[in-house]
Image (cartoon, rainbow, N blue to C red; front, side):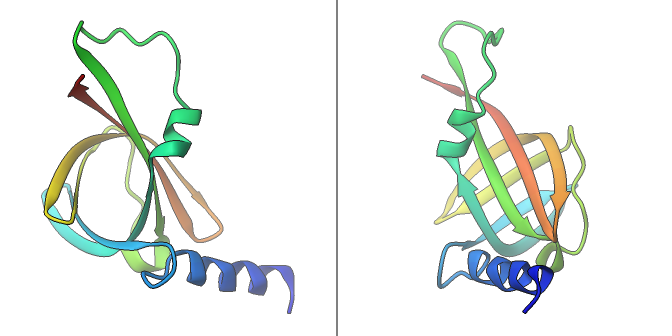
Length: 115
């Protein structure tokens, strides 16, 4: 098995709802999608940018979403709204950064929430 084949196999495991991913519903450009997604709040904390200009009492809540390009079928764009619904709870985000690497979409999501 060559490197690309191994990478594709690993991505299928990572995006498998029985392994790491959760099937989540989300809105993007007023369209509803349901695909396996891995939401990582710890990775977002590690990528946190210092010096935010948020109003007092508000904090930047962030997540990094990992989605298979094969499952989603398109590449989301930066500065679009992105609402994720997991287990009946919806969180509104703004796409701060969107990149595509080896069949995987990585979205850095930002939002404002009360402390």
